[in-house]
Image (cartoon, rainbow, N blue to C red):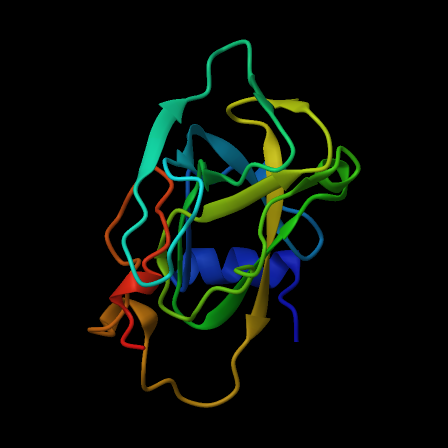
Length: 178
């Protein structure tokens, strides 16, 4: 079951959902709009290795915006910090972003119960497009969880993305054992 706007507000009031900053005008019928933060990043190396740490270069989006180019993976970050303690958050791109040829996540659209952070975006585009800090970029949709939770993300010793950040975070796949 997807939470309605009223249920999202109730969860915010109870502390089960945290959105910071929160602005009521960003609340949709069954979602909350999130915005592109001021930081983007790209991988320094052309060839990435899943078993090694792949360093990234951070940069701020200038006031005049930044042009994304095809065939480049950019990491972005949401302006909003979120916490979800009793629902599963899903991040989807806004339709207006899709109509500009921008994808905001390759595979990581689902969060975990207990995820407490900004969202790193895996941004790619089909043709050059200028983006701006603060522009609407996606929407969070919340699904109810049935049953008790034993393993909250923010309490897992193996969780790789628990450190609070305002910048995009590179892949931590290299921390896995394989």
